[in-house]
Image (tube, rainbow, N blue to C red; front, top):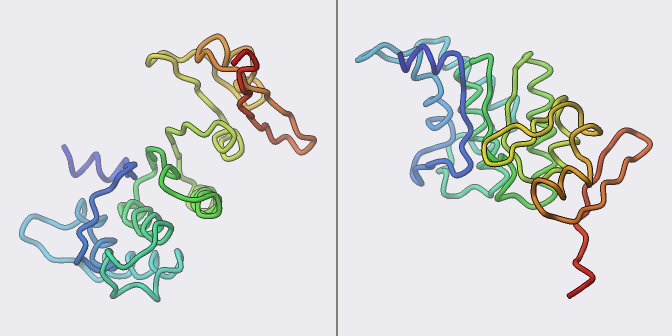
Length: 191
């Protein structure tokens, strides 16, 4: 059922529905719904989970603020906190950095990576920024029309030839000494 699924998989959508007047702490509490019985009330444990996440994700200063008053990066942390409140072992992220500037992208992905390690989560993320995907992923699956065309580590998957073959793009792929793989789009010189 839906409750059992929500106990196993938490989801962070690309464009989450954020009720403007709802407070941060109330929104994070929504993640506890799979554990609250129909017509039941939140338990002491539910409140403890939410309080712990609000502290861990540095949201305490915003706890009683309406969601409408938060910046993009703050909202992203709140949505991640709501997902983590489900205490599910699998976290699905749909373009978690698409609406964020470069600094907030890095902070969001560093946060997810830290939480993945500390909570031993399985994180599956759909991302279009190939450099960020390679930087923050252990394994990549490159999809083309819904079919996996390359899988493995960033060095195996993110290759100029592969990107040209399946996406028709010219890109230079740079392998840094520290293992980072950077994908740089190239301009069409013929135009």
